[in-house]
Image (tube, rainbow, N blue to C red; front, top):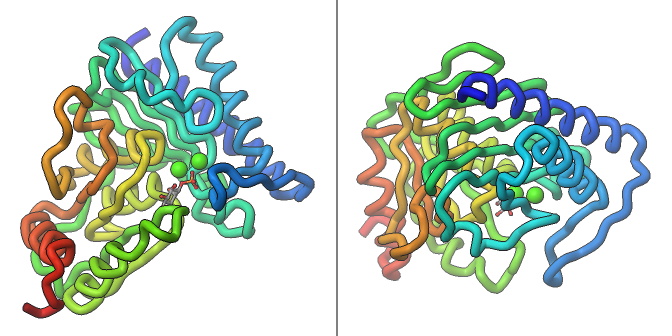
Length: 273
Ligand code: IPD
Ligand code: CA
Ligand code: CA
């Protein structure tokens, strides 16, 4: 199967998963649990993960999968070869609260490089896609990131981890960003935030997230012309494209300035200094 055919299948599976998510919200009879203390997970997250796993296994038997709910074993990131990286519901809190920023994210990587990405937003009827080296699209139309060139004119997306005690340093970053940039958005789906950088609905996005949150969206943003990277060096032995700590993705012209601002915040500098 060539890349285009593989992407077609990924889109079909993501839309099928999205239909299940929409149906589950209509029925409103799913249970809520917590993993690791504060992280919400519903039975729909698990059911959609299973649906995607079954579909991928039927079409691509034996290809390893890193998925948030059913196979979150990150040691797979150290292996060569093919790897599926899947978030069945990105934006679980939004899903549970009846909000629309919810996505199914499916990426396919080869030797640590993401080749194909699909982010499908079932409540918004938008499917973002990218093939490495061939640009990015939403519902079949090409997308491009913004060409903003100052932080003052930049709308910046971010997010916060479930663990409240990890939020303090992020509040420092926030303090700097709201003092310097146009404004901030916290929409609750990292995958969609990245796609929104890709189509100019955001000028930048920064956060620390897991591989399934960003693998597809990062490719989509980059293929749409955004500059992608990390605030600090990535550890050796892990593919940078699947390493989610301190991600920064933005319109190309503001990347350096925003990276400096965030590092200044991390170093304890004062806003405006
Ligand atoms: C979360 C979302 C959110 C981000 C969190 C993620 P989930 O994913 O992407 O925007 O801020 O860090 O964990 O839990 O809804 O799949
Ligand atoms: Ca997620
Ligand atoms: Ca999830």
